[in-house]
Length: 85
Length: 356
Image 1 (cartoon, rainbow over the protein chains, first blue to last red):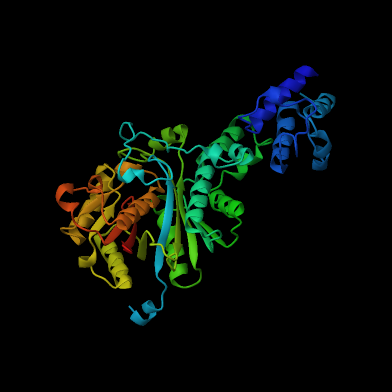
Image 2 (cartoon, one colour):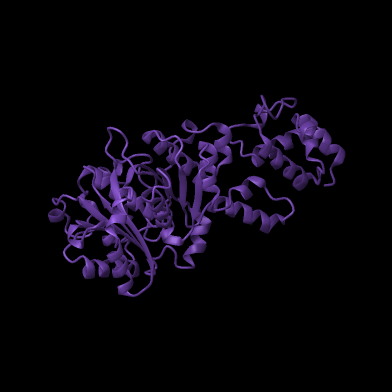
C-alpha cells in the first residue's frame, strides 16, 4: 500500500502540474480538496482520468469522487480494490 | 462619402496597451534599449516571460498554458492602467490559438488513444479559450469574439472594435493579439515555409484598451482614425482600400507622415511593402518593427502598439526607420499609416494620429 501511495503522489503531481510540491509535501491522510492541496472540480476530472488511464478504474458515478478523493490513502485503497491493470 | 454621417461617428482612442514579447515584458524599455534576440534568421525566439509567481495564485499558474498566462496578465495590466475594470467588449485576434495545449492534447490522442484525454488540455486547446478566459477571470461578460485569420487576425478584431465604438454600440473594448509557438510546432511549420526567410519567428501577447473618450486628465497613446481591410493581389485593390480609408478619415496622403510596415527581411514579404510605399507614398519614410518583435501571425498587434508608442512620444527611434534614419528621425510624426499584409493577399490599413 505504501508503494502505491507514493506512486499515486507522483502521478497526482504530474497530472495536476503541481510544480512547487513534492510527494513529501502531501500527507497520506491530508485532504486533497478544500484546505489541503486546494484542488477544484477540474482537478477532480483530471484525477478521474488518471485513475482510468493508469489503473483501469472507471468511476461511473462522478459523485463517488467526493468520497474517493478525500485523501491519497483513501484513493489508493479504492484503486487497490478495483484496479484492472 | 456622406460627411454628415461621418460627423456623427464617435472618435476611437487607443488609451493604453501592454505587451509580452521578445522585448522586456510590460515595459516600453524597447524604445531606448531594444533587445535583439541572438538567433539565426528564420529561427524562433520565445517571449520573455515575467515572474508569474508574482502575478497569479498557484492554482491558476499551474493550470494555465503560457499563452493564457500572458494574455491574462497583459489584459489585467491594461485594465488596471486605464481603470476600466470591465470593458464593454473583448475582441481577440490569434492566428494559431493555444498551440501548446493543442500539442499536449493531440500527442495524448496519438500515443494513448481517445479514451482517457486530459480535460485541462482539451479546454485550453481552442482558439477562443483566450477571450473566454479573459472574460471569466475579469468578470467581463459582454460581447466577446475571436478572429482567426492568419496574419490579419488582430486587425480583424480591431476592425470589429472600431466599428462598434465609432458606431456608438459600445464605449470601450479590450482588443488583443496573442500567439505562441512551441519548438516542435516551429519545426513542423518550417516545412510549410512559415514564417519564411525572416529575421526570426516569435510570439506575441498584446492587449490594448480602445475607447470613445480619453481618460480624464490623461492623454491617450493615440487616436485610431480609420481601419480598412481588403483582399486581393492587384495594386488597384490596395489603392482602392486606401482611398476608402482616407475618405473616412477626411485626409489625404499628404497628411500622412510615415508608413509603418511589416518589413521582416524576407524578399517576397518586403517587396509588397516597398512597392506600395513607392507607388502610393513616394518620399514618405518607411518604418519597421519586426526586426524588434519578430514574425508571428499576431505580431501586427505589436506593430500597432509600437506605432502608438511612437506617436505618444512624438518621435520614432532611429532604429525603426527602414531608410536613412539620420535624416528622417528629425521629422515630427503626427499621423502614421500602419500597413500590414499577409501573403500579399490580405491587407490591413490602420490610420493612427497623435493626441498631443
